[in-house]
Image 1: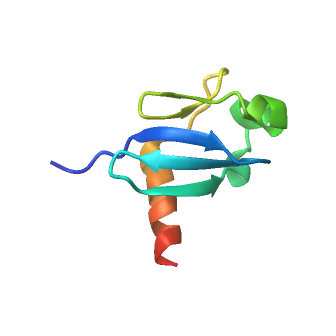
Image 2: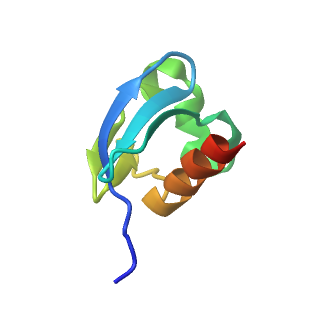
Image 3: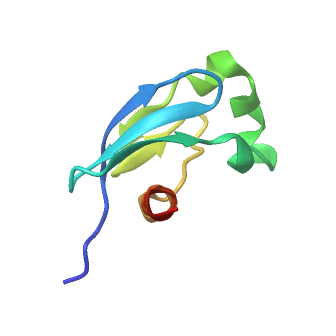
Amino acid sequence: MEFLPIVTRAEYQGEYRVHLTFNDGLAKTVDFSEWLHGPVFKPLKDPQYFQRFFLEGGTIVWPNGADIAPETLYERVKSSEAA
């Protein structure tokens, strides 16, 4: 069975950055600013709204239903570790 990454912890780090921890222990701060395009992400450009995220379905989610797949977040963290 292929590993399915799950975000187990998310801590706000200022601006559009969130420190993510995954179910295998991998952890790193991710800058979400590049994903804040399109109608569903528009409210997240407000830093106060951005901070209202929570964990659901194994990833980070905002009250308006915006989310980013945990696999996408995991790949971002893994690729930045290799760099």
